[in-house]
Length: 70
Image (spheres, rainbow, N blue to C red):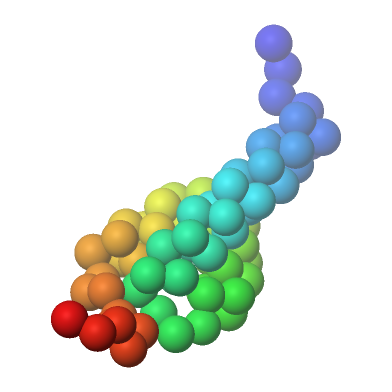
């Protein structure tokens, strides 16, 4: 099976959406600006390996305290 440009482009687009969603949900817990985190994640994931590194960076980041009372 040959790897066409359209198949490769579809894979990149799908990967960008998935990494963007994962970045958003991680950004809700780990940052104060989850939408900006998701947009950065989508742009970084244009190169799939860089997107995985970005998600790993977010996953290892400390949670932000959003003013919860403890």
